[in-house]
Image (cartoon, rainbow, N blue to C red; front, side, top):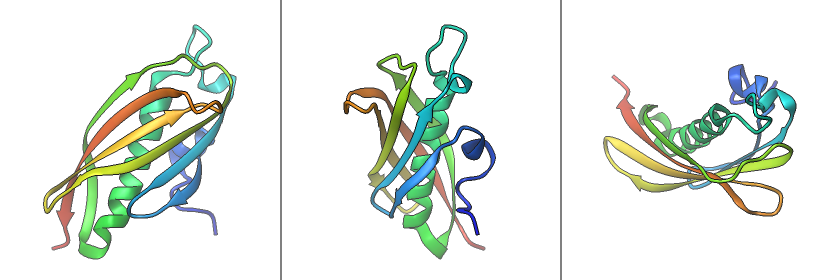
Length: 128
């Protein structure tokens, strides 16, 4: 059975789940021309997708069987243009509360340079 996280847009973008826990999520993907915007660099939407995915996975693992989590805000800064190589997104929690969580996600290149940084706020929805 395939990893349920690696489906939909995550699968289309070739994003791989490398490590998952309630405290850290690591994703990786190889940049291809399919990730490029017209100027030949990775499209910001790819970064936003990786950031949202990494934060959502970690938040869901932490919240567990208490319910579901949904993203309510994704604020991403693009810091370095990339056109090739392998990128990694690492998500860690900033705050985990009763009703919301805030996760920090950093995307780095193969030289460990910061490429993009995002924060995702997620709403905890308790099971009814």
